Amino acid sequence: MLREYRPPKVVHPSLESLKPAPKSLFNSLFHRKQPRNGSAQIPEYLPKGLYMYGDVGSGKTMLMDLFYDTLPPNITSKTRIHFHNFMQDVHKRLHQMKMEHGNDFDAIPFVAADIAETASVLCFDEFQCTDVADAMILRRLLESLMSHGVVLVTTSNRHPDDLYKNGIQRASFIPCINLLKTRLRVLNLDSTTDYRKIPRPPSGVYHHPLDKAATTHADKWFRFFGDFITDPPHSAYHTVWGRDVIVPLASGKAAKYTFDELIGRATGAADYIELMRSYEAFIVTDIPGMTIRQRDWARRFITFIDAVYESHAKIVLTTAVPLSQLFMSRDEIDDTLDAVSRTTAHPNNNSSNASNASSPTPPPPTNTASASADHSVAQAAHSHTDVDDTMRLMMDDLGMSTAMLKRSSLFSGDEEAFAFARALSRLTEMGSQEWVERGMGLEKKGGRSEMEGWQRVRSRWREDSL
Image (cartoon, rainbow, N blue to C red; front, side):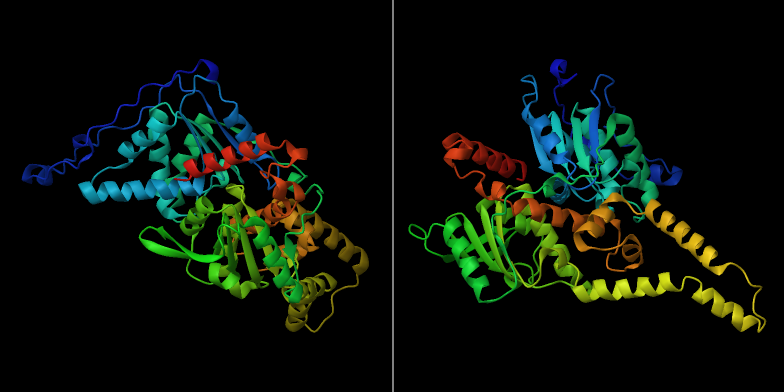
């Protein structure tokens, strides 16, 4: 349908129509409130968008990138952007408009028109809603974009019905879910295979433990990715929203940090995105194993990994533990396993104690072995029905049982569990020889044309992340 699609000309609402109605004694007495102009009317001829969801490594991003790169020539304006970056930009624009026109100014239609002028097809990667500020504006924002003829294509880790689950004021978000299901074709890409984890020749960019060889490992890769001859290692500074982001060591297109310098400080997604615009390779050293006590570190580090992956940059790590134990200590795994083992070994222990306390008379004899076996089978069957595939991927990585993961308290919610699984999956792919050699112009990969192609991908990401 996009081959014949001719997006309409974008018409900005007037500033006057978005200002609040002037207050008057008459209005206040009779409670008359002037309705806001510019309510979004979605044209009937707007082609349906696409909402692809599925587990980590199921090919969602690859399919969206393929779609983006093969759009017909009549689509002259298009944008492909990570959803987190998109919402960050939207909030920045809304803030600027309200600073200029007052807090009561309805900035969403105007910002939507601005975005529509630059993209008649808008591709989001990793659509999710975890923030109440996003939840409260998303429906009107997406509706306004569609009213200007913007076709939406997005990937997500979950079905629209599961977006913003258990969020504050979720009832107000339901209209957005209905909009997505009505105006986008929902496609399930769930797969039992994580294609990022298909065995590839390792590149050797990850090293553990933190021994003497770890320092040599980091220095070797920094020299490899950097440009020590024309740009010797030095500190650098970048400005993000009026404050400095420090790079302790930079050389050419490579940046080197210790974990404490990068993650131990109060850094966030905006800082990492700015770094991705300036550098193509990151060496991060002295990464500890993170337990439940360091969840803030883990969340920041996962956000950094996502930024590296989305920008197609390279990453080198030296860690205290294997990657599979990076966000969960061996002790935590063992403690949880022990607790599950005790529960499984004595499934009726608590109920038996309660029964004995209330009555000294033992219960009638039954075939306890058979009953216990039936109970265990039923319990196991039940546990496998309500644990999603994302959880199973993590269990495969960590050697965990279903029951163990269900009883653990290491994750605060489904979003955090998914982010954890996605980070492990992406680290696996970024540790491959194929990922590291991409864009280097090696003869076996296609020489200069391959390098130029990779640079175009990086350049497109920089434009989309502005």
